[in-house]
Image 1: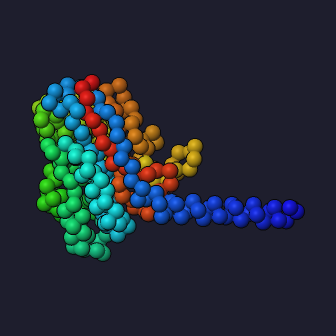
Image 2: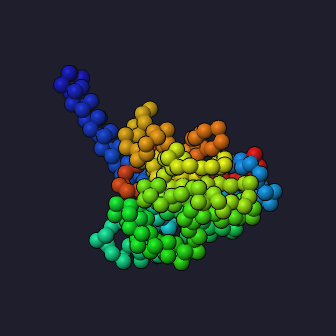
Image 3: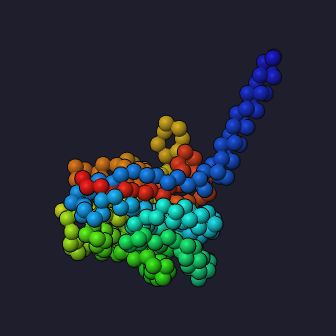
Length: 282
């Protein structure tokens, strides 16, 4: 092979690989859902919840960018796992003012397929659930109404006890609605799991007396991650908060979901996720 032929073949291989990566990132990985299974050790867990299964979903982003069929299929996969508790950590929708009431009708249609936990189905809101500029409470009210119509209890700086385990649901950080201090006043049990949308809430808000697990979303795991490098786009101040288990401090640990949906239909080395935790006593 002469030099010219070698250069042309090499260039062709590089271009072909790039096209293949783009095709994979757009056409394959955004809908290649992973069910992540692991054990979840919780201090003071009531004996009756040992072995219970908790499903964590986040960032559905129901709207113009995410296929309804894909979300419904994801729900079907979750239903087959028979979870005892289902939690959703915000961003039910990707809000578009131009779509008007149609986006809430779409949300209603998709959530009609949401499987319920045997014991409870709980959620909090994310920044996109507050509409433009994350500041429209009317949008949030409509999202809450559709979620509750589908049998989901939406916590807004509140606590819901489930068989002796408290779920501390904190409203969204970017919407300036989150208040863990208010939420924690309603605690009844020594065993608790906190729900936040944005993992930065672990640093930027006060959590008096809280220790244990915090479930979050918001980051989409960075959505696209170059090999051996951090994600270039990450919507958090604390750059450690990407995905999976992250130790906040001696008392608190985050689990950050990679999310089910997306804002832009592209994922690379960051598959969408539903996490399924088996509860154990710490």
